[in-house]
Length: 407
Image (cartoon, helix red, strand yellow):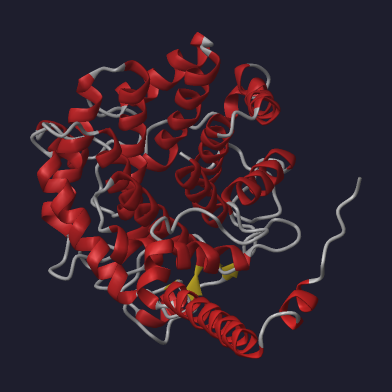
């Protein structure tokens, strides 16, 4: 037996007129209330306060095509497919250059954080000839730019446990603090060696990535505190000697310009040191103080686009990608680690990442990379530097950023 349903309209029609009026009023009221509360809720959710609340994790949920995993894989794959580079020259290099070392290291660390075994194997395969017929391409580690190569075998050892990597990398790290040796040893080499610093010390800001990256990687790999103490002492010496009152660094003591990538090496170097230093290390407070001072200045000078410029404090300078990548890496890591205020630096880090990757073309080459640059006391010299495409100075920090976002 089926019960026949009476339409709601017919039910209303069967009620007395006054009751039908009351029901129509209640229905209208309910509809108005629903609309009112719906609009109110939408307005509240759209308010800046709740938008900020919803966006507390500024370093996740990127737009399509902007995820660090996608971007990192694009650059790392492109690196694997590219022959050894020679500072954007057409001729092949005689040895592995430091921009390649930094990019290679970035790709290995990216492969580790994404657990990409095929990428890791490709990066191992790239190294294999250096243990054989291409051994002469391993740089002689008598200069910071050559010694930084050691970060590559240190990283590969941690992933493969092949002791050939450890032997090679450890010898490079140790020779950086040995007595001066080779044709590059000078009287100043002995001066710094006698002060307990690396004999490769030259007081250029670039050194504070080249030296400290190698020694911190030695520490991460071996667990020996001597490597960390060396790097920390070296960093404090540079900070005490070179950091300016505004938190930034001149390219060199006799060159009073805040060159973007030079300061980028400092920012990345301090970031690597702080990642390695335990909270009770005696040099940590000094390094953290300088890091905060620099990050505050960088926040001030970030361009409206999210980028930083070839000369950081010069609004006429062009926007440059290698510096932006290094500063973005320092911001991302600082926010993630809790060294930087999330509400101040989180949006800036996100904006910088999204601005930076706009310079990545369909060939996975980044544009607006300052060419290799010597120091010169001339503003126009920096403004006129060539803007390279696909230069590994610019490719490397994008990989570092991708890894930091995924770490």
